[in-house]
Image 1 (cartoon, rainbow, N blue to C red):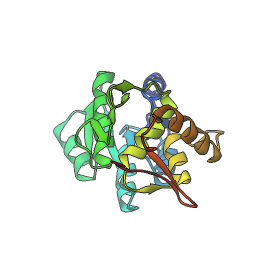
Image 2 (image 1 turned 180 degrees about the vertical axis):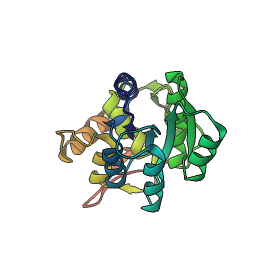
Image 3 (image 1 turned 135 degrees about the horizontal axis):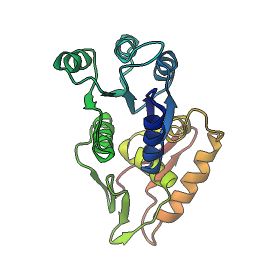
Amino acid sequence: MRLLIVEDYQPLQKSLEQGLREAGFAVDVTGDGKEGLWYAVNNDYDVIILDLMLPGIDGLQILEKLRAEGRESHVLILTAKDALEDKVAGLNLGADDYLIKPFAFEELLARVRALVRRSYRRKHPQIEIGDLRIDLTTQKVFRGNCQIPLTPREFALLEYLVMRSGEVVSRTDIWEHVYEFNSSATSNVVDVYVGYLRKKLAQPDKPDLIRTVRGRGYLVEDMQ
C-alpha cells in the first residue's frame, strides 16, 4: 500500500521511511508543508502520516485543504502537540487518528495497518479467499496447508489485489499503489510481477487465483 510522510524533522523522517518500506509499503516523503499538500492532492494514498508543525503550510491547513478538495486518504496526525484542543481540532478537521511523539514504531505501524484495512472495509488482519490465506500482520501467505514465500513487492501486489477482491483492478491502479512517486518503474512491470505471483500461487488441479480481464486489468475472486 502507498503512504505519504509529511515530517520536517530529518532523523524521524528517515527512520519512518526506512521502517515503513521494510514493512512492505511504498512511501513518498517530504518535509515541506506546501510540497506535502501537492503530493496529497495529486496522488492517491492509502494513509498520510502528517506532522502539524511544518514549514510553508502547517499540518492542520494541509488537512483542511485536503478534505476541501474531496480527498479521502486516511490521515494519521503525528505531533508533539498533546493538548486536548489540538487533538480535537485535528479530528474535527477530518483526521482519522492521532499519535503523540515520542512513540514506539510498532504502535505507529499497527495504527497504519489498521487504517489501511479500514480503507478497504476490512476489520480482520487475516483474509481468506478460497484456499488462499493471507496474514496482513505477519505477511505470511498460505494456499491450503502450503506456505508460499513472497518478496515484499510480490506481497504488496497480492495484498492490493486481495483487498479489492471481486473488482477488476487496472494496471495503472496497481502501479500507483505499489510504487513510489519517484520510482523509475513503468506500469509494464506490473505484468511481470503478476506473472511471478501466478507461478508461486499455482498448484496442480487448482484454478488460477488471479484472472486477466482483457483490456481492463486483473481480478482476484473466489473460484470455489
